[in-house]
Length: 226
Ligand SMILES: *Cc1c(COP(=O)(O)O)cnc(C)c1O
Picture 1 (cartoon, rainbow, N blue to C red):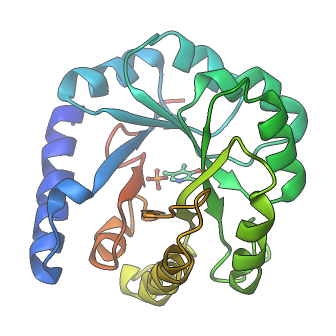
Picture 2 (cartoon, rainbow, N blue to C red):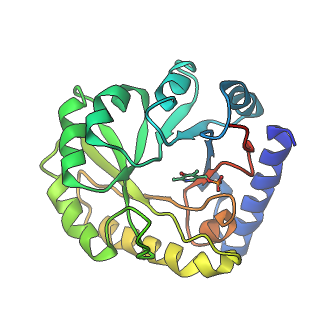
């Protein structure tokens, strides 16, 4: 399938999910996760009208992203080692995987006077294999981030467990939304925390129903070729 056809299909599903819960589809942005595909296929997505792109590795991801110059808005969605921050920081507009103070410190140090827009990754399901903070740790973590002036907490991110029936992911997405609402209520100047990065190919419809503002979609949008 062409990216264009896949995109139309996904947008239709987002529109229908929004209608069911009374949301405006414009509040949901699609991040095309291009980690499985070549630069050429990524360009096909750009030509189809995709504006947001997600890569999960510094190796390869930075080179691919840099080939696009000023085109696209680029999201770093993978786990990030502090020693690799220097290499990637200038290339990405958003980082979805802030999960520890040592990483915030390094991002702040390397920011070069620019704001670093971050999502805090939360392990809502508590699965051992997933990274992210425990929900109960998030608020104090946000408070501590105030000491790093470059860090701007734009929202929260999670990955739900992979399950056959996407309906089973709903409680995890709902929990992330409740946590986002709690943080937002504090009106921290360094943490507006409006956004929710949640939902992938198998579960984005449920995520949108539960409030996702960024869905990260790879295989069902651009496919897998690498
Ligand atoms: C790979 C990946 C995705 C996209 O996965 P698909 O199931 O192919 O849509 C989304 N988020 C993160 C963090 C990923 O690593």
